[in-house]
Length: 215
Image 1 (cartoon, rainbow, N blue to C red):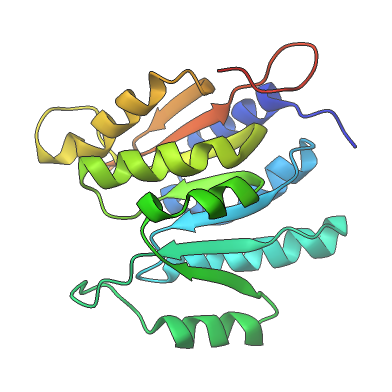
Image 2 (spheres, rainbow, N blue to C red):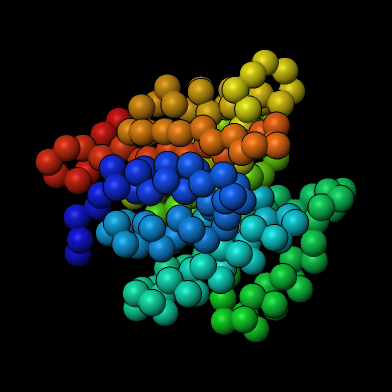
C-alpha cells in the first residue's frame, strides 16, 4: 500500500481552487476522488445530504471511473434525513435505480447523523462531504459523528460555509467548534467568485512517522 500523502492532497486541492474557471462543485463532485486514490488515501466516500441528487450522481460516476482506472473497490455512501417537506428532495428510489443503471451502485441510508454511531464506527472513508441541514446543531453532529471515520490523510468537506456572523455563517461556526477537537491537520476555505458561500476542506490528522491519527 502506498504511504498516504496528505500534503500532496492539499496542494492538489489548492491548485484546483486557484483555477478561476473551475466550478466550485466540481471540486467535490469528482476531482477529489482520483486525487485521493493517486495520493494513496484509500477508503469509501460518504455524502451527507443527498436530497437534490446532483452531487450524488457526480460522486457516483467519479467513484465508478476511479475504480475502473485503479482497480479499486471504493463504495459510495449517502446519508439523508429524507424530510418530505424539503422542496429540493428528489425521488430517492428513482435516484438509486438510475445510479445502478449507470454502473454506480450507491449505499443510501435514511437516518439522522445523531443516530448513526454504529454506521460511523463501521465506515472507513477517504472523503466525507457534509451538505445536509445547515443549522448549527445538525452540521456539528454530521462532522463530529463521521469525521473520525475518515482515514489519516483523508479529506473532510463542508459546503455552504461562510466565515461571517449571521445566518449564513451557521455552518462555519459549526466547523470552528468541530476544529476544537484537533482532528484536522490542514484546512482551506474556498469561496468562488460570484458565490456568497464557499467550500471548506480539511485534511484528517496524520501523526508524523507512523501514519496514525492524533487527537
